[in-house]
Image: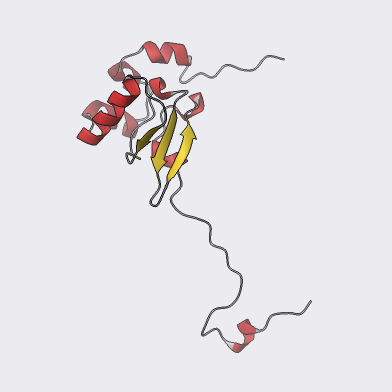
Length: 127
């Protein structure tokens, strides 16, 4: 059984890498398309220059950058508030934003009633 090759809107990653940003933007959903066509901020431009230079393990605070086909295979360190999360960009991530893969919030873990809890909620079963 062969592994199914990834395609984005009917195009392989190799075909997507050959496209310019404007041509690729036409394949994106409206919000991401608008972001790419409108242009990048200075910080985002510096980040994309590092990507184009072929650097690996790039640290960035730009969580709102749309993942482009040329980023596939790169290892990025995305800031998530207090530290950096290491992400290897996979073909399935194309068209999403970097921040989607570096969650900033942890799950809530409740373990015992807090101060000021009512008498009934303070009771913990022995079973």
